Length: 158
Image (cartoon, rainbow, N blue to C red):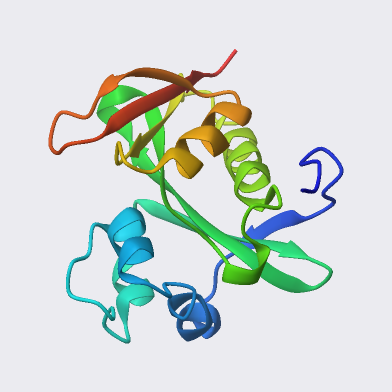
């Protein structure tokens, strides 16, 4: 496993040209359920495009000129927070520290805003890999989500 501190990858803003490429990373029913709570595998061709909204900032983690992970920052103004969503790592790059690196970089990006006090992540309980990834990125388990079965994690901006 690669040490996430040694990964030199960085995030760039997502553009639509990568949509189909990222969609292919949803390579199983389990991944579809974990990433977007989907149940009718395979996902629609335009699924990544449907995630793009004005209140969402989407990013790609690029390593050696190649996208290896995707994630989003969802503005939650009423909570003075950003929520990290749709974390997805390219199948051949999983378990190498890229998910943790992406989460760390998304947190750094979110914490630059003066009106943001925390960053939140909501997970399914049965996804221990994602839970470990978030904890390695400094997030703490704070309870369960209020709208579906799952875990709520938070990291405060200091």
